[in-house]
Amino acid sequence: MGTVEIMNKTTMICAPLMAQSVEQMVGDMHQAKTQGADLVEVRLDCINNFQPHQDLEIILKNKPLPVLIVYRPKWDGGLYEGDEQQRLEVLHLAEELGADYIDIELKVASDYLAKPKTNHLSGTKVVVSCYINGVTPSKEDLSHLVGRMHATGADIIKAVVNVTDITEIARIFQLLSQCQVPVIAYSVGERGFMSQVLSPKYGGILVYGSIEGKPDPGLPTIDSLRQAYKVDHINEDTVVFGLISKPVSHSKGPLLHNPTFRHVNYNGIYVPMFVDNLKEFFSTYSSDFAGYSVGFPYKEAVIEFCDEVHPLAQSIGAANTIIRRPSDGKLIGYNTDCEGAISAIEDAIKEKGCTNGKEFSGSPITGKLFVLVGAGGAGRALAFGAKIRGARVVIFDIDFDRAKSLASAVSGEARPFEDIVNFQPEKGAILANATPLGMHPNTDRVPVAEETLRDYLLVFDAVYIPRKTTLLKDAEAAGAITVSGVEMFLRQAFGQFTLFTGRKEVPVEFMREIVIAKF
Image (cartoon, rainbow, N blue to C red):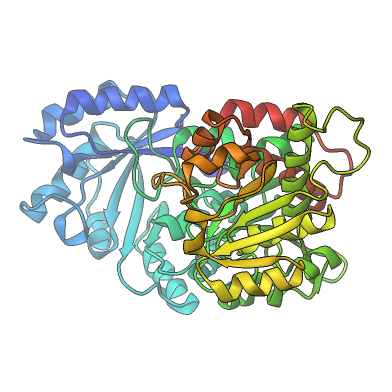
């Protein structure tokens, strides 16, 4: 596969390889190809007792796909500590032996490229790279940097930054969209994840992905790039949706929304967005993205950044979905958590036939005691849903003032969080956890007394990782009906699909099959 193809193709996936032996490096190259990589980046400085001529011949003669050779010095974040001239000679050797690409640092690129090639027919293309530590440069400084890199005579330029805030990625997108030469630009780390997945939309030629079993912190896996994000299908017309949360890496949203978009032939992509400051985020991305899911801890705070709020979300005081209205660009807040959670609870009771043997025309939770733990965004959705269905709501929260405020809004009762240990519910009550307690890796459950679990008709847990939390296991053992947060997640996603795409017909069974397989 030639370099011209890489420059013209929409998106190529590159696997960075850092094996410590030549044998393992060759094995990793084949593994990368099997998993779907288009090329590999071979880090020579990671190989122990590296023998340039011998080891390069083995690597390049056994390459199953194009190779980008990197020999990173310690002064630029690599492991090589030897003589600089010898390092550059190794890169020239890689060209002579037929490397498809070699990577040279901006600091030495001009001198390196000034040296005549010994083999003018090699066809090797040079990537001039710059790794920027510390503060992300301004748009102007990045533009000047690109100019310097281009002036070296590079075939491809590569700029890698380490953003401290997601708003800095906007500068990377601008660089990608305005650059007139083939460019690789992204940020590492969880806050930089969006820059890698969305790179194809803005003109980036490569996306980096780690091979299975050898994760690279801050990089998506090859499998996720191929299966969940389908980066080779992303183009400038792809509509972007994101999950605003902190943290965000645990989210299963991309595994559900992205395949569903493709299933209905909708050119959209859904990506996690690690947001530290809502005001700066919405100010920076004032017109870039079409909509958002909103996760912990922003469901309440996000309301003030919406231009309009749907009446249900307004009454709840929390939004889990925001849509940018195409006609005027205004942000409209919605809440699909409420119906998603309450309908899951109602249907579970109906399916178990726990309606006192009568044909039930209303809600099976009408008149029941609804014990809610957590008064945040998800808790507010549950509380209002329970109130609308006619349940009696009791709320426990670590922030007692917040619990009292919510209780007042739903004509319920607030209790201090510590009282839940001794709280004795009436028979047939419903317990709902709307706190992060129980979420992987912290599997502690809400501290209700184990002996009281048998008094609850149903126990619901908004946590969906793991699917069956410690609370649900204990409740099931006590004989209660249990409802996982996975069911709430799925049902609220039905509502989001309609809001995201404008389509009324939701592929319910397709989405449920994904959840069963992936969650």
